[in-house]
Image 1 (cartoon, rainbow, N blue to C red):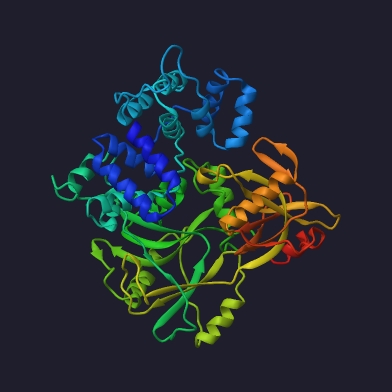
Image 2: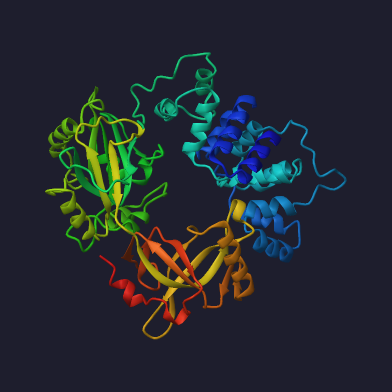
Length: 527
């Protein structure tokens, strides 16, 4: 366990992307099988250990240390695994670090896979007694399934690819045909076998992505414009007998949207935007807030499917049967897509419309007037562009609409995670109601510099008026200028509003809290 725990520690405290890639690569080259395969599964979110719940870990530590000490420590540290790892008392009459190398990562995974939920706390405690604080932290992160060490699944796959001189797109294409601990993947990477063949399986193809538009204009005789819909980009892969849905990061999300997977029975690969139909929009797309009710769920009830009916707005056709269309121009692929869509279930699939604009100035006017709940901006695609993985210059551009802003008052603050676990970095902010109350309208944890974070953390500590576990309520005196992409009605929030992508744009020391914006004013921005 020690090499893996050292890797997690290093990843938490390494900020640079290249530094993280180097750490992952060095570990994967040095670690033995199957430890490195299980580590790769954990880093990519593909290690499913169902035996241990966070509540059980809390009960374990309360039985071993003063519960008041634990609660105070948890409040200060902000992370369950880190708190328990640091507080865990050593076994009687034994040194605190007994990791002699026999407790490997594979051993840990095997034990947790084999144990029942009832027996899991005792098994976990036995292993923790033979680890140092770093090892206990790694073990608890594995057991609860939330590493949170500042890397994405895509970054972990990139680290693997770079470690063995492979292309990350090649790794992505075979990834879903393999299972942890990925023996066949490492055999290929180290030259013992050829590349695993995913043929016959509904495997992922890397997405084509867009650069932000930085030029003043483009020639619409060379580019076509379509709306950039505000859902999540997905790939539908069907073999005729099996269908899978993949997110942009290559994650299999079929279980979260089973009705979409069931509705597609074709042999093709399509690219589109996953959306939810709006209740008051004639069946058109609802805001991202509606889609968010279903994201990340491993099982979706019939009621959830009925309340938030999903559909896909199709952008592109990559494969039609066994025919690969990616080398064709966008114009040719679009023609094939338009011919393909009518055979699909119209309640689950439709075609993304092309924007009719005479020239770029006219397109700019259309974009400026678009505040639909489900529109994020405009896509510009070269008519002669093939479908190529990644971002290629001058082929596709995304032209997001300008953000909205509001002056809000900080109400609550919570500790962050990872390298921010010592700072109050997650801020809930509100706006005024007509009767002079503050109602929360959003929460943000980005947009500020490191120096501003220190200042905000200091403000929270010096102006706390109440504590609720890891959350502090603060004096309602600091105004934050919040930028957000759009705002929507929400039944989940007291204000009746939910912001899309809120972030701190500016700290308004110059503005009195009484002059912050109102909830009624924000409601006028809802479309």
